[in-house]
Length: 327
Image (tube, rainbow, N blue to C red):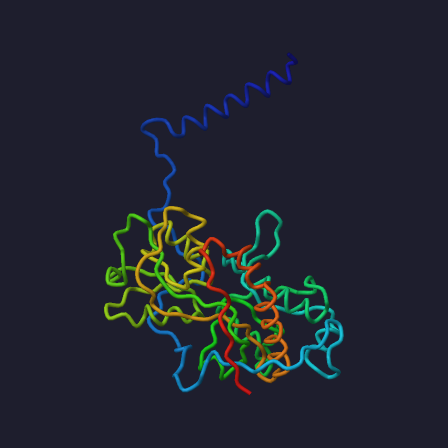
């Protein structure tokens, strides 16, 4: 053994002994903070704009599709022709909602049921479902991303578990519904919480910009509502005991539960909400075109195939929701 190697070995042993002695009995071991801080942007919510609005409109009714053009041959001057010329369909999506729109850690790609719906729209414009440019949006910016009058337009469509409401229809247009969900609670399976009646004095996590905050804030014995920017932050807060429950649509909760089997969905439905594609308000031709795509996937078995591939864990599907049309 060389002298140089012997000296390096002795130095390493000395370093190891020093490190171990720092945690010997009587010494002060490293202490974790007593309370893990919530992520940046998290805050208590005491009120939120009513995104549902009044019942004076038929929120799920959309424009009737016309004759569907062939892929690659969009009508001159149409919104679809401009998208075709650009070469990509720009789509606002989620990357934190397991099963609907999430970044697959195995390949780094954003995948899910919503993403598949967007690809079917691209298929009917280009003849190629891969002609999409996916732009992750947090829930609070799904509407403003479609508002050019505010200088905010970033995408052609939003496919992100977005529910049409009368209030939201003042700002953007919607396709017909392609999925329907209800809202429940997600809690640790030993929490003792079985319904909303057990939430008094407790903290519930929701995401800013979602309509699922309103039913929680409207409870007679209202809990403390903590707003986050995405559902994975809510999951972490629930696992760390910083909140007692998470409340939103069942498929999103089921996706969180899939990531932690120690969680359980409980209680009756607080609300029932459809999902539709969000579209810029003055792009009526694109609304009719998207509705034509949704008619195709309902009728040719594509919707059921996508459901089986992405959402089978939710149980057997009753089929796609029937469209409601006006005009």
